[in-house]
Length: 68
Image (cartoon, rainbow, N blue to C red):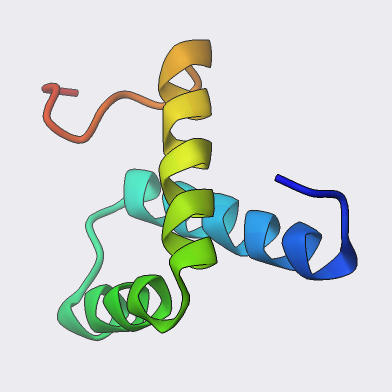
């Protein structure tokens, strides 16, 4: 991702969603908010996917399909 203020905000938002999602299951309202954010801009989805990948690689959070 490029280093711009917008990208920093998008990246931080993606990381915050990943943290929220892995701390506890999202309720239907939060899930709808995440979906809306992901669909709002392809940059959002790309940041979310990249951040999710980085977290899995570093082992900071379990994959959502793995038992806890």
